[in-house]
Image 1 (cartoon, rainbow, N blue to C red):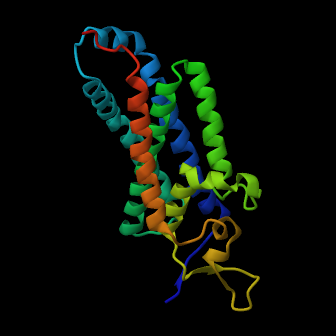
Image 2 (cartoon, helix red, strand yellow):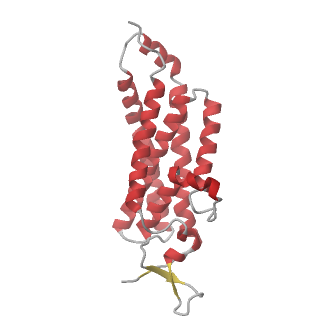
Image 3 (tube, rainbow, N blue to C red):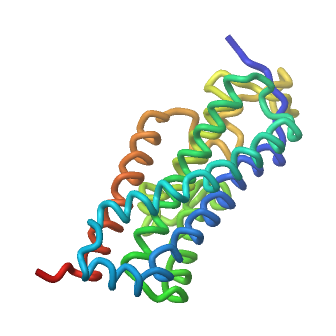
Length: 231
């Protein structure tokens, strides 16, 4: 059964903008988390005041409200203004995807910030990494050279963009166009959608889940070198 929808560059661009803006912001916020508290963490861990796991969990959980509330408000406003699919299920799927990606991006920032305690260096590295992820995400560049095409398999932007597209379209969705005699074209053939594809959502969700856990594990292991408890 065909699902006929309106489609514009603005809607597709907005979906990718979600992945970019809400990738950079939580990452930058997380990068500075440990560098600003290094001296305190070093001193208190050295005296054995608490376990590293207690500090790490408290730091992550304490940041969650603001990290999740702001993108929720942003998406709630922009989603309905931009003519996205007007049903609650699609909206909730897009919202869950966005919040999921925010947590992954936060984990990336925590990992970079824990490994590189210098704020300027960590911010520079984070910017380069996220820009590489965005360029390989499938929106700006559809023909990525083979020698760097592997970056998309590690790109938060690529998987988030795929899931956001999946919240709005399926393989049978069509939109009005002039290139087809019938006046309707498949959304999957749209240039900014074709490269990413409207399938493989389970793989994308699992990949983000691995990053969600993996980045935080890297951050935790990197923090273990700070303020080793004296015995």
